[in-house]
Image 1 (cartoon, rainbow, N blue to C red):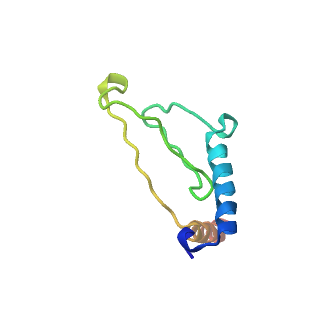
Image 2: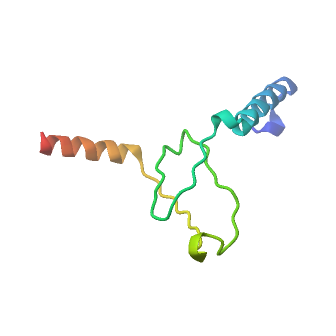
Length: 91
């Protein structure tokens, strides 16, 4: 079912939930802000973190270097499997 197909009552409930979600994303107490230095990495569970970055001007970084954001995704099943294999071999 899409939003267009739902009942007026379900849509009102969606609107309430959506407004609450937006309020949480804009609440300063729910944010972590950190200026990263060249070579630093941020690792987090993408299923539980809403992430973003502030705008920047090209070439405005330290020493004229441009910023670069690269994402990578890992299946947790693969990570857990590798941990189990390593534990068997190490212990």
